[in-house]
Length: 260
Image 1 (cartoon, rainbow, N blue to C red):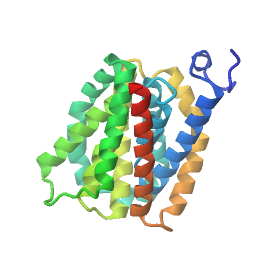
Image 2: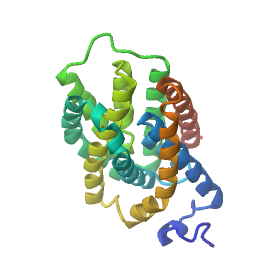
Image 3: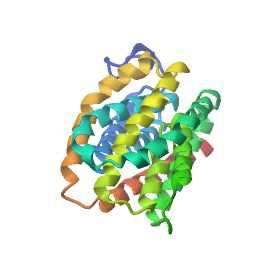
Image 4: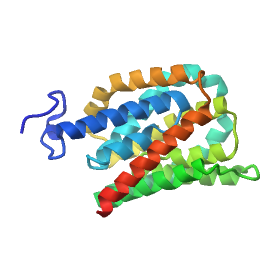
């Protein structure tokens, strides 16, 4: 079979799913994810994994999403440093550090269809909760923040979408948009360093994922620049709503693909 993109790793070219339509889906998903990350600070892994999992085995988008999240955080660090809520990040990471290995174990042991269904169900649940305007009536204390971090770490290890529980938590807390965006970016950097080391230990983060991530960098940069440019020209709430509706659509497609 002729490889639709000669720069792809040989193992990807040999895969039966590596067709031109599949690569177009992956390219569009990458661009949408990068724009969302540049604008709101979250949504990258959810959009990338949800879209790529429609055409590729779940382990590849999870590994690539982790690598690109780290790259995106490094690129955005200088612009958000002063707005980060470091105390909140510390509490979230304490829980994530404990629970991330269990998520990676699920990724390496579960059947691909099970992981796809988990991804789609998680996206749908969190997106609908945020769209419904879910809010916390009282501030969450230290124990609650550590627990949210634990859920985030588990989900990130299994699906690379650990940002969704944190997005739900921060959105429900009515945190200021600039602080929310900055805290997302800083938290994802630390979270994905943890997940990346665990994935590498389990053999999921191999040369195939590294080369694929490198090929994705130009599109990531373009998306981040476009998203960042629009951050000051529109309300974060408006773009978050559009992103969440996109996630709902991707989740429904993913669920239909697995069940049908």
